[in-house]
Amino acid sequence: MPPLDRNARPVRRRLAHRGEGGDATRLAIVEAAARRVSLHGADGFRLAQIAEDVGITHPLILHYFGSKRGLVDAVIAHIGTGLAAEVASFLPWSEEIGPVGSPKVEAAFRVLSDRGYGRLIAWAMQQEQSQVSKAAGSVVEAILASMVAFKTQRDGAAPDDQWCQTLRFWVRLTFLAAIGESFAGPVVDLGPAGQQQFRVWLGDQIAEKTGI
Amino acid sequence: MAVRAQKAAVADGRTADAILDAAEQLIRQHGMSGLKLTAIAELVGVTHPLIFHHFGSKHGLIDAIARRHASNLRESLVKLLEADPHGPPAVHLILERMQKSLLDDGFAALTQWGLKQRPDIVQPAINDFMQKVTEAAIARRIGNRPDQDPEAIRAEIRQIVHAAALLMWGQALVGASLNAAMGFAPDDRAAGRDYLAMLLLQRLLST
Image (cartoon, rainbow over all chains, first blue to last red):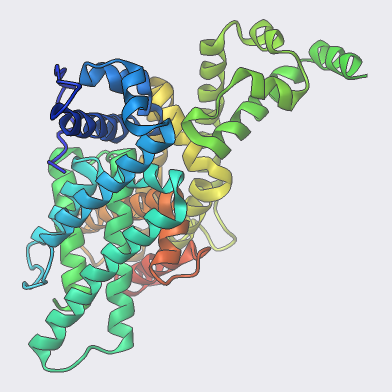
């Protein structure tokens, strides 16, 4: 999935609806739906508006996806693929965090908050609880496992349970806080500079608590 | 029977409250798409046009819900900052009460809805809420640690309250399913808060 630009206006495109244009149209529909949801949450998922963004008629969406549910499933699969690609950039874990913040924490906020994946994940969880939360869980587990592997290799010994619990807590905090921010924006009005400072602060906390 | 009860309620103005209660309940349960007039009317046991009679239009109803929620936010803030027998509430207690207001009964879903529908009404209430919580925590901390630089305390408490608020927000919206997927108990809402409270107690508070 290409990066979501939440400030971009929907692009109206005329697409060929037959033959080789079909796949392009399908993808355009799914992308338009994802963009709508990332901006407006569940309210954004309206077939008429999605069709308008793509420059096609509403019934054509049903022609491609069978039903609204069919489109929902396609969008969820699309989000999953996009998220997997984003997560790949976190792995394998190869750097110390801090002392002046963490590029990884900032990247997590960029993906989940700035680019709207937080809203997409929350929406997807509403649609299909078990499948999506399992996927989100395994994403977080993969990042955790990679961080544990990094520490093990660096220290020449596996970390203890206490350390793993602490790491788990902080990674979960980062994930939830970034999703929270994607909805609530800066809850405490920190301003853009303050928002950046917060991400740095969070990175510093993780560095201090986990030593990586 | 229903008609008589309804007329009595109209007479003493309780119907308007019942309609607002029902609308809130639907938004808490179903989020953004919960506000359907027919569903509200059915819950209250009145006819759909009676909602218009009380609120003028759907917009009028949305206004009324947003205003009531903003005033509820202010009320919960008062409770949050209420002194306990030992003086002003400790920072971890403030966070605990904040978690309770934000998470109970879909409060976050309702706030989210209000922020989207009427940001002009709900956003100032939220800003006020967060600002007062932060100030109270800062005041408590500065009072406890006269030896520390007040500016440094201010900066750090701001970050911690911000972290707690975002964590609670994310937790309220996707927490339960994520908890389960990450090996926490599904209803483990407190894990994050307790850790933050511990952090505050250990590193920031000397009591």
